[in-house]
Length: 148
Image 1: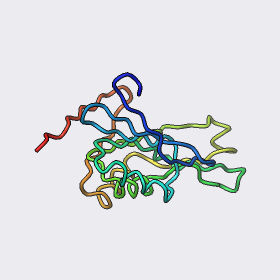
Image 2: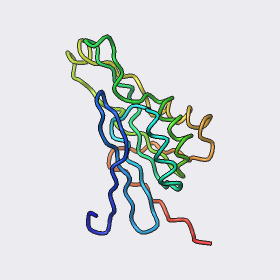
Image 3: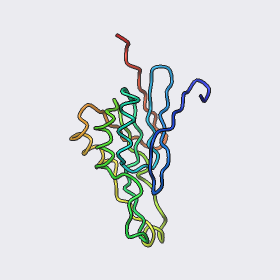
Image 4: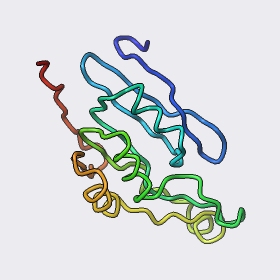
């Protein structure tokens, strides 16, 4: 617990095994995907947390050039596939403005995922999910579902 927020570590992989997080507060559940790749273990999240209100998903598709372009972060299509699996009410693409700098982008990393590509892919794969591209600092207000 982090004050009134319950934090649960869930699977993730960013080149090496890592964790992503589920945050629960009152009747709202948020999935923070960090920089994970799309891995089979992420399907377990949908079983443990059948209602996710918001998914925050990296979409840059980061690849490491010196490692033969090894992918270490989901691309827009993979993030949309994760939306299909998790079925969040809302999804927001994150970490798409990443840069390795002028030299790093040429020699070390490649990243071409865009939030627009994610929104388009999610519209096809995760039709129940509402996507939003937020400007830095722009809030997103989500209300809990009414209990029946």
